[in-house]
Image (tube, rainbow, N blue to C red; front, side, top):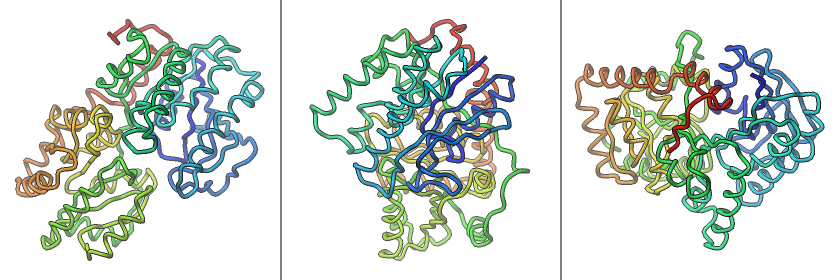
Length: 410
């Protein structure tokens, strides 16, 4: 299969699409990736790249990566984010027909965490190449815009909804990362177009894991550590975690370790200093190669989301990573993510944004015998292998892209 992957985000940024492309290449498919200049999550163009101009390189030895000009996200603010989104659309719309003039494709896959508008540059390529266009929906628009507070005006939300309907109509197939996405997505698209296709990751190999700084190793080895890994933003209910840290302040053997960065990183540091939270550990962001070792040394893995309907329909990709790591999980969230953890018998679930139940759950997990926690981790890994393992999911994706699989969206 000759596949074009279009994604505003790609390696060296840490997104699940990276491993999927690597797996498809290893399975013998020809993959071309169109993406922007790496600047997520800190908003600064990575060293070795520049915002302007077109750059080309190779990923996984044979996958051509074409990087189009982009306005970096910057340190925040709606204007920078809007320019970031628009620059990818405009660059792609005008440049891709020329840049891809010598390419032929069987299918186009658009990996669509926010913004869903990144599918727009795929339309002229679909028309010019006669390729099937498949959109892999990671966030529901306009619901996620409202839930994060980015757009609150009802008229604007209605206009965004109308735009989403048009974008979905231009796609041949919609893949949704959660079964709970099917109903809201069908409000904007024909239900027969919609198929459940979960996020997947490569199973961890600790042999290739990067060594960790000795101070972090000391903390992880000497305490009962609940590790949260990933984006530290508005959707992650970090206020709840900080409130839990305050309540656990005198239980010095319990540590909340938040690995990552995001829009609320500075706020977290401020809270740690203001309230003297020695049990709140903020080691920063680590490369993907370091994460298996962090997970291995964690006592428990923590995932949280705010109490919004759209987030209850989401399975954060860190859930798959946590399951693959084979460690017990505490899911402070509602809906699909919590359901998966409970269905897998991989840990304990507690309602989103409720500090009291979260504290009870942390203490209950700590009180369990180590063999019980180990059994949770093993059950989670087995569930991952049966439901989210990358090799099998990549093969199923090819069937979905080529329309060889029977419709299952209804």
